Length: 319
Image (cartoon, rainbow, N blue to C red; front, side):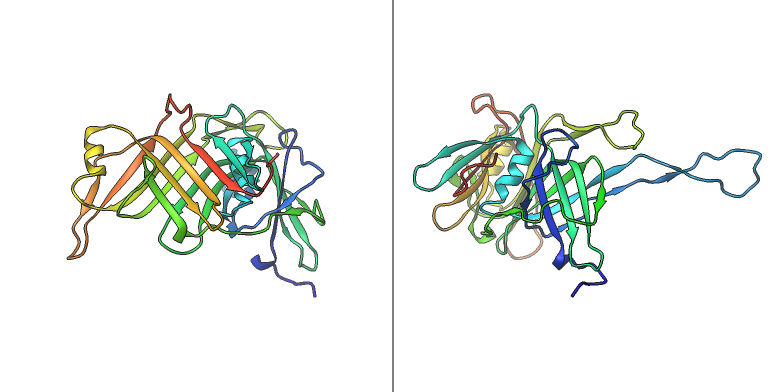
């Protein structure tokens, strides 16, 4: 039976890559899993008061359109490759000839793709579907913990929002869900497991420039990537040496963040050149002492990139 009010449990998310920025493709679309999103457009009202018309307020004018928001998505064996392609551009894919494929993305590509996203509420008495052409992924944030499912937070920038009474694709493709778990996560230094890590996170950003030109609809003309950046954090049990010594001498280290699962499948983010600050630590009781590192990554001339993401799964391609 149709519902009067919208519920998140009934919401849908569909996405397709655009051939031209801001032009919604007819299909095919992918139905994607998500946890939450606040992607939505806003157009504020402004004031430009005139004198000689008394003390009462006059009509406001409409400002520029802003269509941005976050999307929390599961780190999944298959669908994560879709989001990594949106973040970095097309991967280099290797067929392992055993039913698995290795996909590799690198930061710093000259161009990244745009997508049309549709957030739908199909169970309403009057269904509504909000489409966001010209959606570009600005950043990806991943939190590492000790238990629970692994998730990522994406920052999205779109050109504008349109609404429709029917979905753009009634039969979208899907990815079979298989989530990564925090219990199978790892943080490595120089390829070896880093001991004593109690938590970590990283954020990669394309640092998009919202290109504003004179338009009669108030929307942006494009969202162009500028200088890519990556930074993160680690909390480790303080032992007086190890990372503390490396932070003190200023030498960069190589860090890997990632997850594994049964069958040898793996999602990995490699930072070949990471600089560590002098750590902050505190003694807060009789238990173990922890030190916190807020690190920054930089381009590595030998490897040829700042961040390399790889995904070993059973998807043939992400074109």
